[in-house]
Length: 213
Ligand code: GLN
Image (tube, rainbow, N blue to C red; front, top):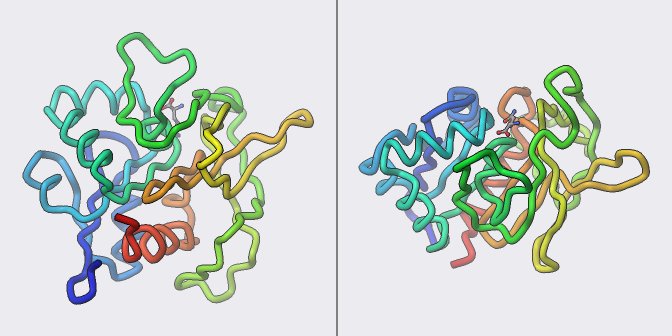
């Protein structure tokens, strides 16, 4: 699809840790920019929705007239990756949303916000990620991936066509924390705040450069 040009990857810069996502993409040498308005949204070939607060992302994207345009671009196949609050924004359904809270949608799944508990119950855990063969710039990285979870959601229910790439077990029940559906990727953890760029590498190589249109 992008044989001669380098795709431009935008990071939604309304709220949350968008700078960390941008820095990871810059470190990887990708062509990237912040998305704050309709002009920048119209130029990008892929989008990252950062972690932060999904209720605020929902409100601000409406206030900046970006809600419908982003929803439409995702529906038309824009490769998009959402981390944490970004995962919530990519879910077709949110369990017990805050009043007026809406998601862009795109992945047929139901997510539970703050599923692992409050801020003090934030944690790190080694994950086995199915299909993560991309080792990025860190040649010493192991096949395990250390996930950082901060007031993280989990996937409560998922349509059979959604690929579950990683799960976390809690009281004997396995909860998906990384899913892929067509050109959409979502993690309930935050790769942007670690030095391990494999998740971004996977997104760029597998979902952006080989976009399934
Ligand atoms: N709990 C937040 C929300 O509901 C997500 C937290 C995060 O992105 N670290 O949006």
